[in-house]
Amino acid sequence: MSISQVAQQFGVEPHTLRYYEKEGILHPERTANGIRVYTEETLGQLEIAMCLKSTGMPLKDIRRYFELAARGEETQEERLRIFRQHRERVLEEIATLQKHLQKIDWKISLMQKKTEAAGPEQAPK
Image 1: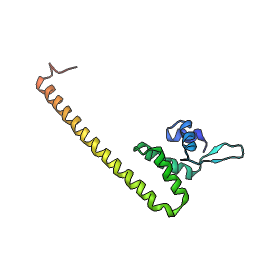
Image 2: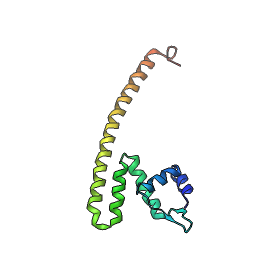
Image 3: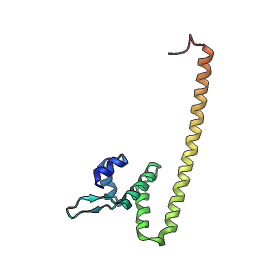
Image 4: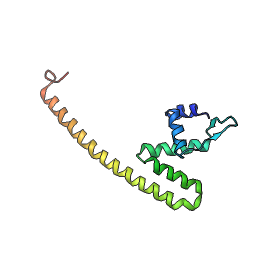
């Protein structure tokens, strides 16, 4: 796949893919003319990178993960540690968001009760 096709498929701009390449996160193959070609393997790496990025992992940690993965099975434990630590951060963020959601739901409930008590004639439009 070309860079524009990949960008469209993943909903990102081509410059994002170039940036990930510059940062050592992606390594697309190139044709004899230097045109980037994204293989299934590269697309899989991009999918993982975007998942990690969207859940708050810093790019330096994403890069570190892919550097370790490129070195092979002897880095399995360190990669597992990176993922476990990130998972814990994601769970903490989910817990925080759930607390915020409870507060929002509580406020909605209060406003609904006030609206219902006011009756349909006095309800805000």
